[in-house]
Length: 260
Image 1: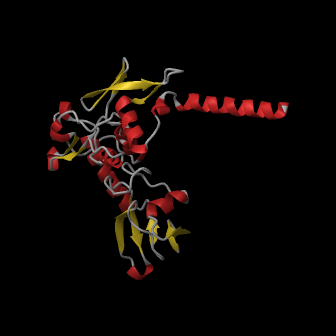
Image 2: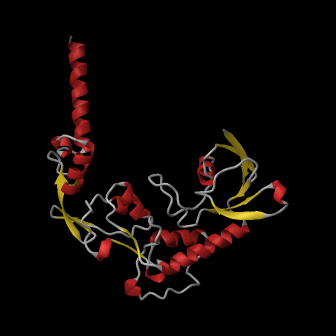
Image 3: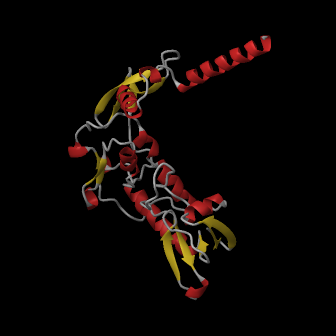
């Protein structure tokens, strides 16, 4: 079912079940986000995608909603950058700047809203700070991948993302899904001398037998082969080398057909 509503005074349409953020971005309206990622169901953790919503029958009344999880509805009027929305986003960004003062992503976002520093002060000692905004995306993608090696632990000021019992997680396979999805690039890893170090564990790396490119860890390869019933030679060559082989095979077939 097609739904018609307004964003910043422009009439737009969407499909039932879509969110305000999805339709807004499809129509070229920019709404900031940190925790939103196409690999995960939206959960509104960062709150930065907040927008203003009203209806004619509300007679001037309005609500402020998280657009990544707010479903579109006929007749709503959405404003993405009203003065009130901007002030709310500024407050959120200032809190993030206090928590993650060294994050380039947060600094850039703050600059876009005219913020050079936070009015808030973090009670954490500088050596204890990191760039984690506690959105939980890393733990969620780990669970989606079927490993659940890390999770949110603790409450309030002591809340952190960590492996069980703060020990090297036995379920981790070094796939780097958590690294790639982190909006502030907080999760660190190191590849050197054929090994990958992450979350306190060391993994053996698989290299392409032809070009030597690092592909994935042995643990991750074994997990994928078992889960998807893949042949043992699945990870002998990288995607680029496999593509080159495919192109070479197609060229041989074309030459053979032309010769015949």
